[in-house]
Image (cartoon, rainbow, N blue to C red):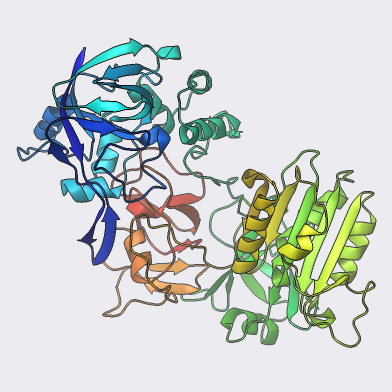
Amino acid sequence: MGRLLSVNVGLPRDTTWQGRTVHTGIWKTPVRGPRMVRRLNIEGDGQGDLAGHGGEHRAVLVYQHDSYRYWQNQLSRSDFAYGQFGENFTVDGLSDAEVCIGDRYRIGKALFEVTQPRVTCYRLGIRMNEPDMAALLVKHGRPGFYLRVLEEGAVEAGDAIMLVDAGPERMSVSEIDALLYMPGHRRDQLERALRIPALSAGWRKSFEALLKQERKDGAATGNAGLTTAPGSAPAWQGFRPFRVSGKVRESSNVTSLMLEPTDGKLIAAALPGQFVVLRLGATAAPALMRSYSLSGEPGASFFRVSVKREAHGAASAYIDDELKVGDIVQASAARGSFTLRPGNRPVVLVSAGIGVTPVLAMLHALVAEASTRDVWWLYGARNGSEHPFASETRELLGALPRHHSQICYSAPASEDRLHIDFDVRGHLDVRVIEQLNLPRDGDFYICGPTGFMSDLSAGLASFGVAKDRIRTEIFGTGPSMTPGIAASPRQTPDVPAGLPGSGPMVSFARSGLNVRWGSSFKSLLELAEACDVPVRWSCRTGVCHNCETGLVAGTVSYHPEPIDAPADGNLLICCSRPEGNVVIDL
């Protein structure tokens, strides 16, 4: 039997951290007397980031007094007070090694069920004044756990904690936590965990992803339970020289390059939808670095990339005006996880403008395999002069027995013929999609401007298409994920003010930015933030893998070491530093 030592609550508040405002409910303080526990919260309590904390399966956070003593010894501290770890219940007993997911406990008048280990983020580090705290809790097997409220009721310090029912499979909080975050991920253990009804949906999804993860030489590469897209390992690291063997004008503003390896060796087949990074101009840094989707048949002996001429675009201007057949460019291996899924489901390829390139590669792949799947081709352009690959796509679609097509011109020219060159006058948008009676059970692939993808994704979801069936590809930098940080206007990536660093060259390929590493930065994440490069992170200590991204070229060292390694060809920017020049897919 355990005992409730303290009930701790606190409402979210703003605090200053590294020059930014963080909205957080990590500060909890003890309260006297009984407190009512509701389905989503304790009276007087709240969470600042509901995407990562709170909700029905994370209503109450529990931490143990024994762990208090453990951390006081480990950190040589004696300044802890109840609520120190952001927990709602400080308890005597109920260790993470003994409590199991699905256990049910009676505390006071309320009934609870254990749903998942605690997921720690950087805000505990702020509260503890210990930046590595998120990683330390996992490494030491002391995360704490969340409770779901089965019966509402009053609780207070001093209440006994009575085990009412033991969860199935008898997998402890520590076991479940290690199964996701530590290397190994044994299939039999994953299957056991998924047999526990009480396990929260987020953890269930992570374990399902680990079960489906492809293996390399019998071992997994990366952690599919933590990152949505580890992708396949690139065929080579860094860059190889390619010769421009062809240059074709596809429309008034799009040019294709055919690139063949100069060594004459075969290139590994790309997956339909993947991209390559090109280094243009001088081989010495800083060169122009850009990411381009492959637009040709994935199994070809050469790469085809198709580039839109952008106003003030240095790379596209160089390709249009200076690059000639016979010139040499440096290319990375194909990479990326926006790829065509195998199977028999209908395929819906949706694009606008130059967003056509990755889905065109998918169309090539479907024709090459003589697919009998239902294939929908939806495309939007300004007019016929800005409609690349029009003849090519018509020919490809004609080779598919079950194809459908809808072409939209937002501003057709006088020579553009309705029902011949295009089907709908106007933008390709939710209104058009709504009239097409698309298959709700299909796989949807969307590429184009950010607003276009966001609107269509939301529209498809409202029509009943499952979110995991809607996949999007972003050209350029993606949106940031900085949980709890107050929103600020998005800045254009640029070299930070002040004296330039004297270290290795760090190239952010999607941002088109080259900047010297400086000793004032603790990680590549901090450098990216200083450059206003959009980033994604949560723990900042190598645990959560939200910051995982492609390492196109170069090597890095880690401090602290990640708990589980990223996928081959990737890195965790939150805890890495460059060892020589590096190119990062950001």
